[in-house]
Image (cartoon, rainbow, N blue to C red):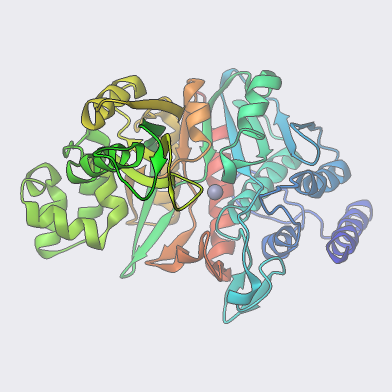
Length: 471
Ligand SMILES: [Zn+2]
């Protein structure tokens, strides 16, 4: 309730300034000079207070949050609920014929346990230069940056070379099926003419004063499998030579003891080369030519224990996560099951991976079923959007380097890559090494001054792309 009141007051204040011709229009960046006087940090703080913890999501609260501003500013938008309370919102600024740009955010956040936080996860608080709150990094912070860029461009009234679409979607944290996936299936028109998309997944890193911006172009592909083993059930007091459980264990052991071979695919090679540029010594040499380094088992072992997420980019992997046997200690069950979270490199079809997997765990009385898989896709690292981002940020941050990253996890970008949209995980927010560790954990926080800078850089990047002569 408090949030609503704050919001309302601020809107009223802005509206009054507008009516009275006060300081509503502020000089801002580049060619687009109109900017509603919405303070990014205040706005993000309010947005943190909008409860969108998933489960259950309640993203309709986020839709109401954005809708209030859009209503007041006279910007048209559409909304759609995939289920009660699961709100999605999108808005479009019409422009020229060049392929449109979509700014995509998910508004849901993962839960935070207040017992382990310095402050209430849903009550933004500034401490020692950092804004604490669930979602400030993943991804309400970027969401607000996208919103402010969109609103500023809308208010400026300048002619755009392409459509600009703002989308705030539900459910990314639980797979996006009530969010982007639902909008694609039920409101495909929201994506009409969209050729480019910016989403979460890449950001800047401050390394000993050097700035490196990572742009995510692809991600590993989840292939979730269920292995079931059948066997003669019986009493626990007289084990047979074989049972459903022993068969399953044998298969799982085989899976564990024979990891998938190392395979360096071109985007991963390029990512390691990008990382190497900020390093020195042997590590730099190894990352510079990762295909050579991985031939040394000691290197692979060390990388696996020090950087498991980087190691995961070098091979297909499987984590055994769910096990089910008997519900009674003295009953040997007829069926034992395991669910396995496999992630394959994005250079082949999921069906090929499943064949590979089956060959590894094959055994009598065993079945392998696919429970979920996405299709692999890699976005173009030399598109005009990438060029534009590099040009703009190089001017704002002289000497900054760029790298193209591969994510070991997945975001909603796989849905939009399936539509043929060049989708990039990108935010110009600069983090210190380890600073983003509160994501999905405790005490998620963002550096206030660097966040302000990121918001203004984000706007500059978007403006440059929607105003530059179309290509
Ligand atoms: Zn996220």
